[in-house]
Length: 164
Image 1 (spheres, rainbow, N blue to C red):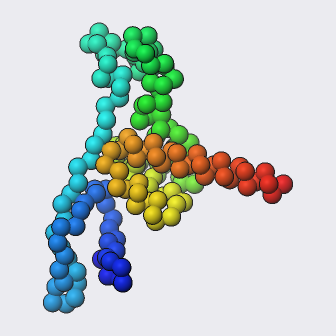
Image 2: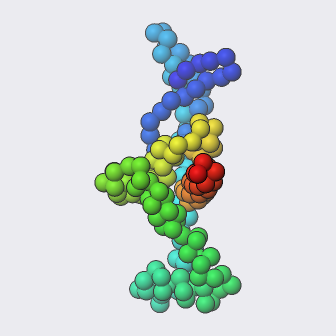
């Protein structure tokens, strides 16, 4: 915790969002306070929400095709709504910057842990990073992170074209 002219900066390591309720200083000057851990939301895949019991043994690809057939959503739209799609998009970009073993380890900890790790490792400014971390929904955080990477990739391609 660092106090500056305009407010307070909290520096923390962890995978839970929290809100500072109170803050005080100890006799030795060390700041401390009370925090409330904020709820984290993970959305179920749309195909699971729509699937009849008889579809439960189907592969996810076939399940999506059946859901597309019985709803007004296309297969592509349903696939794009899957958290796994955005995780795959992020992993494809991250393998160029981080060891695959590290990425696999973070993925094994779940979507929430992965989304926080991605936010911490994206080459973005602090304001954008904080905006990502204030998102209470893991799935939307992953979508936003993927969008940031697509924008960065577009700017990188445009920059490399103009340099040549």
